[in-house]
Image (tube, rainbow, N blue to C red; front, side, top):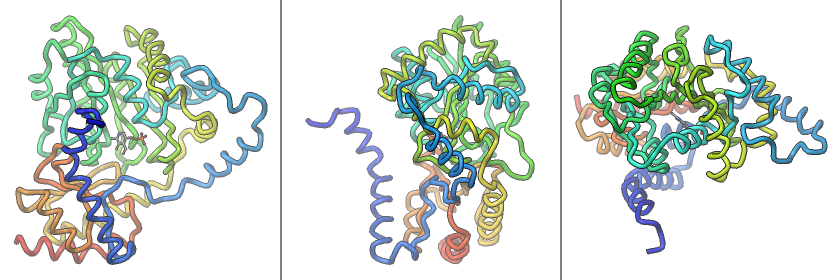
Length: 393
Ligand SMILES: Cc1ncc(COP(=O)(O)O)c(C=O)c1O
């Protein structure tokens, strides 16, 4: 066999997702892309803020000798410094430049930290529904993903997490605001999770890390705030990126930051400086590091996503959909009126509406709508959403 068994199995397992994308492509070819309502991808539709283009031009025009060379693995020291200063404010604790490593997006950050932490068979607990790639990332480094369902409102089920912890648990990986639910985990629940991990680390005589994947941190609505995990638990690491809040996912830039009071902070940072190299990233893109360093705290206009959320949520609720109004990210995760979410998504396809079944996110009985699309797409799709729901009333 040419393709490695593991990859071949992964390809087969995700083949129905691929089939849905192929069907979407077929529908676009047949009906014209403008007539197909594509809510399937979390690819931000807003342009990056103007400051992004200006900073890029500025940096390109001032490049000199060495600008395009390798740099220390964690990134340009002045970039790590500027990011440390910003996240110290954001997280409410003092973070040093040496606690930060620049990465190829949040995906790169997660892989770099998981490779640094996991031994074969180590378990990583993930509350579900969750980002579909976590399974691959954990498996990449010999770990085992252990999923734990959230409560019905997609908040953390701490009892379920407690029950899942065992001698093999190396980390709990959370994502807030969440893809696919848009939920933000509350400060109280993170504090309780921190306390649980302190006592469970003692009981199992090994540090259980809290890994927090936060690329949607700035995409929050109704004045919501994403609580700091660094305040909740010392043995924690943040992974994040500028993909979603600056609308630059193709530029592959993000970072990981290790809690300054993590017992093994220095070893973890040193290990990540090695894993970024041996995973083949070597370092995060040099130009993009410099650009984002100048744009700390900036984002696209989040109010635009909030208006899109309201437009879609109100329209779907009127049509009879059962939805938790999400406080963040740019996804809705409504219940499907039938158990078979794949079938429901197929029915939506017949109305030229492309969404993703919840099963793909380990959240069966739901489907995900990525509403980072033009308002026009939302408005024109609503009648089709209603027609499908009407069939099940
Ligand atoms: C929850 C979550 N984590 C990580 C990523 C990867 O982001 P990046 O483009 O920064 O690698 C995504 C992208 O959709 C995501 O939704």
